[in-house]
Length: 392
Image 1 (tube, rainbow, N blue to C red):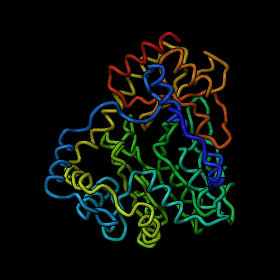
Image 2 (spheres, rainbow, N blue to C red):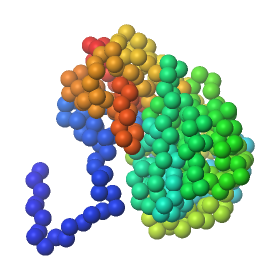
Image 3 (cartoon, rainbow, N blue to C red):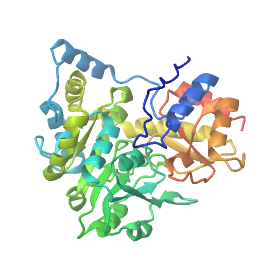
Image 4 (cartoon, one colour):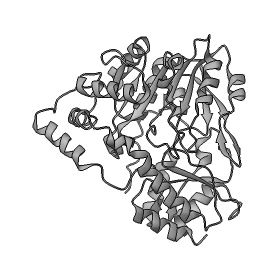
């Protein structure tokens, strides 16, 4: 496709994100499509959702739920969310003043950052970090302060001493992500206690990205910030229906927060989205009445994780722990000394399997010789990828 040249009178625009290009996920997915590679890069399932959820949405459409939803979300869905959080984490959120349905988790994260961060404020992020955090901080005029995770033979862990050292009088917000993308690390209760010690007696806010909350393996428990009253009192907590119910294309999520924080969140939300897809909200409200789909999710994804790890065991990849999410990180230094982006491209074009370089999740592209695979795929997709990776 050819683009038309700019008109000579078109003004030159320097946006608020002049250095931002196309995300690595889009680049690698396009490269995978071009070369017929199995796409284990971008994090989305290649299997269908529960037919009962589709039926619930269709029923909602035919019942006339096709106009604007309330800005905060359908009352039925906010009620279902409140019941789910109370059942899972023993924390009560008011359906009218403390829960908002969003256009996916990324919109929730960006909105929380925009409402909380003022020009010159510092925001602590734990690296490697999901790629939407930095642009949102920049749009808000904030300054990102990165705290690298520690990496050893036991995998990645948060260095709480380093995070405490990163706190300054200008620190406004700390962003958490558990289970963690891209590393698969799951925070423990001791981690949340360490965080509580750091923020106690301060005005620091928390933004907890918990979109993989129901993908925790080997009997571990998801330590939601919602479980910890002292942390919940200063936190925006974000989750995703798309991740939980295998419908990433629906772009539906939600955020919960104490009423004073939520009031500020909604001031931004009402002008950057206002409200989100009505019939899908109604369908999800019905579907949430049955807890089995999310209660069964850990076993569902653990089986896929174990299948994928077993298949990689015969390769020269070094497997890092994968306690949660649907991602598996591997070290490839026994195969090649090249940079991560180059190795991910080699895997895609020469081996026929797309991956994501973990260096893409750092502000300054830190290299560790590690790439990330997504195992949220049909078994036959994973087996095809493993057959190709066996060449390594």
